[in-house]
Length: 370
Image (cartoon, rainbow, N blue to C red; front, side):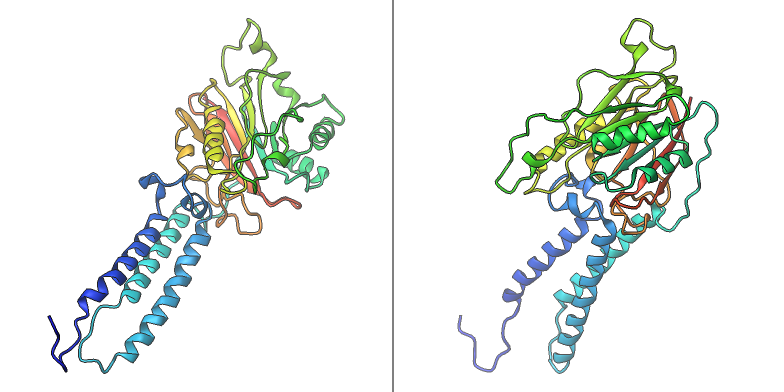
């Protein structure tokens, strides 16, 4: 049908594509708040965005401000128009503002502004310190000093050269009984790269467990998790024989784990999902187990919700973000974890500490036998 000259243009048919795009953008923004509910927490880009909520919230807020400014300018230009229509730009700006507020609310609910309370250990408690030392960046003296200051019984070290891991154990044992040091074997065949950009062939496993002499001798036992960053699963020597301790918490199974990060082209998301699942499965697979390390997954990842009867010791702890160390701990991603069998252990408390030379904070958890 031809439109008569001078009649107003029919705009409704040309506006629905714009509103469709606006709806899609708004829906994607909303989905970053709780992608776990939608089954997207281990998919790109949600897996990356949810790791650092402060970044996701900041991007949403900045985008909301820019779009609000654009909507205001357009509104001023159309002030003399006889027909007013809702602004797509303004609507998306409002949604992004609400998304930013939601991210901020999640951070606050996780203690982003709360002060840490140092956990106090007593006789019989177990203290594990988990730290990614970023290829041996921190000085050995600093790691030893932190271990002594925190009263650690077990150190779960990731990205640690074997020589440095053994040196940490030697220094901790100066003047007393030697500490047990168990490190992931090196020289394992490299996994096949998912593409030509992958760094998989160039990554060596580097993880060590350093165990205080008070826990008795330990040895590497059982099948080790196949993790790119390395893993060590250790059992008390007595467990390997016929005489197991009556209480699993007397000398618990211990493990250090380090998974690949969720970087699609470089490492592959499928491998990351599999490694997170394998690392988390170590804890519920052993009675009384305590597992620490860099899991490269935040509490929003689905893998961290497959703990069975185990608990994430930092869950609910204030300001427990461990990466990157350049951000305040309350704004960082909680990707370093200490997991413990909830039937054998109760959580006394956790804290994080800054260590020079690494982009991770140290996570210390104090556990008490039930």
